[in-house]
Image 1 (cartoon, rainbow, N blue to C red):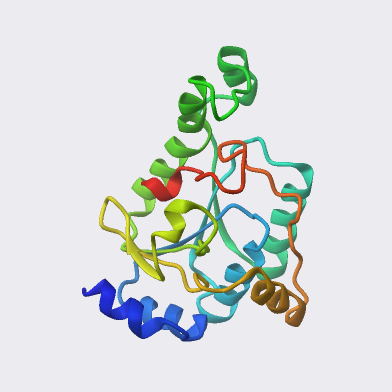
Image 2 (image 1 turned 180 degrees about the vertical axis):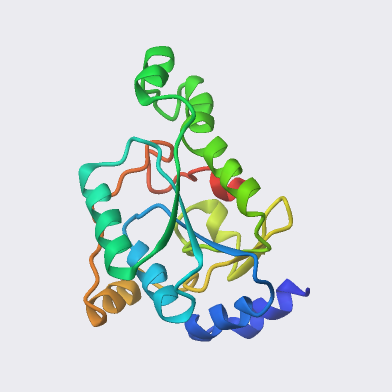
Length: 203
């Protein structure tokens, strides 16, 4: 597939059309979510287009109470086919060994591996997707700004980010139009900062 060609064609195309196009490529597809700030946007669109798609969530165990409430609300309202993946060791044991390392500490790499990267690789191994729908956008991080609507993972999975060029204002308007909540308090212990990459999009 000529990804550059399609990325040029999809500039300015409604996300619904991009999703519908990608769904015809393979039946082996997933959506990933962190139940972050604008998670309701992509998930609600799939409720209308492909409501049975597997929604993968790697729950680090460090989410704030508001995020768990947000996840519960969206799962129920949108009837999500949610598949949750958690670390193989408990939060208490991880903190006993590593503490809660900040991004500039050497232990943070192992912390990231335990709470997010290993669960995510396990999820991909179980589902073996050809198509991976994400909600990454330009300007979020340096890495994400180097991507586009279509990109490829290291394993050759086609990543589709239908809202890639949308602004926060665009997404806020969508939430208002569909009476959907925003998770403004979302915090990712792996990213720590909004401008830092969480890790799964390095895969």
